[in-house]
Length: 481
Ligand code: KIV
Ligand code: ZN
Picture (cartoon, rainbow, N blue to C red):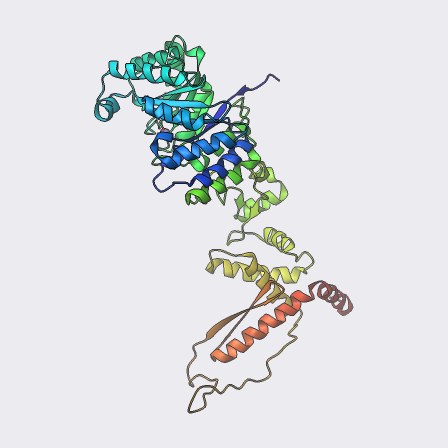
């Protein structure tokens, strides 16, 4: 089989990602993130926009000193002072990239820059030539590229390459493009820019219409060989193309996307967590690849299929992105098969079918009432069923009298005729293992005492679980059950 073509992964989590309102990261956090990125094989790390703040400058400098494999990069507008700041902060690395940009769309040129075509062309010539003095590795971007007049775009790209740009980035700055159109634009650039073979074409797609990843992947088939992206898809407004989605799409669908990235995908989950912690941006539960539910199955049919063969509902393994194990989430859709499997995970592999059946019945009732069923809930249910199944109530309440308070002695009884029930839960702890007991009674204090005894009985079961199971089996065989 022939070598697959390389696609460079350019991460802009710490530049475009940090531009998301509220996502700022400290210098220390950026250094930590860059270590993970470096280890995971990201080709280019855009570490910041050095002119924009002393913190950005410091972060880019620190990263350019510490990373070993990735190429550090800084962003610069088309001005000498921006490019100087990039050079000053990146110069510690043995190789670095300067990424300079200017808007080329009519709306940006008129309202944002107040510049003519000629002035923009002049700024491109000056900025790219100046950046090239500091490094061979210069990237140039036509901001708002997908809303740029194509003939003008060809001219700007040709000029940037002539002045030394080795990567030409086509940003869909406002997330306006759709996949076929984006691929068409790349094809047109390839056919109309005479010196395009001297540069790598890059895609930088925003997600305003939810099409960032689709656009970037569509660009690949047309000739894009660098994709700019961010961990968890963070970025301006609706975000940027998510690195984990791009990389895993290429890996999983290599039949249709015959390319390779150098990413160690097993570090994806770690990168996602560290970015989420640093920015304070939680990852949505159903986020592709890195969401809490991305490898979780709740429906009974799906769980049953998964237990028979993972490929029934899994197109990639959780381990391939650094997630330990597929989780079968217990909820109202879970079936008996998955429930039994869960019991075995929780250490109840040997319980009898009667106990499983009783616990499963209670679990279904609980699942209807409660959104999240935790392992602790399941343990409580099965312990209860064990107590009932074996009529084990080592500690019983014989009688209870309570007198409390000042003045007249209080009695532990509710007014006659009242049928309200108090439900009491008691949590006890032994050797870091918590046990919850519950009881209901019309008398709160009786309910409390019974809940406490219920917890104690369950704890006794936990203590002697192994020998208990053996005894149960023994008694049943003796009793001829
Ligand atoms: O979205 C955009 O256009 C950018 C450029 C600076 C590349 O982030
Ligand atoms: Zn952007």
